[in-house]
Image (cartoon, rainbow, N blue to C red; front, side, top):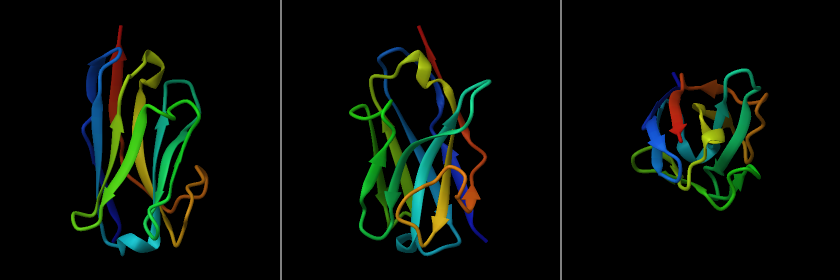
Length: 123
């Protein structure tokens, strides 16, 4: 059974940093694409970043490029999202999700989702 558990969310001031973690189990890490997504109140879920378990290639949404970094630790089966220079518009529930045998992370095509962790960026 695939399980994803996010952690690391919280309250941070504008310009601050947070690191989110997604602990994964129940699948072979290098056969999946793993992504971070977020959903703000009243808005649709959007893709933030994606990493391919096979070759480690990464993708970022335009709004986070240069500020967020995705990485994975295959030994720990954990994916991280390092978030820097946070802005109020980054406030959202952040989810990790996986896609079987994938190299990218379509928001409507992921196979498994975590329950999310809330990030709040205050002025």
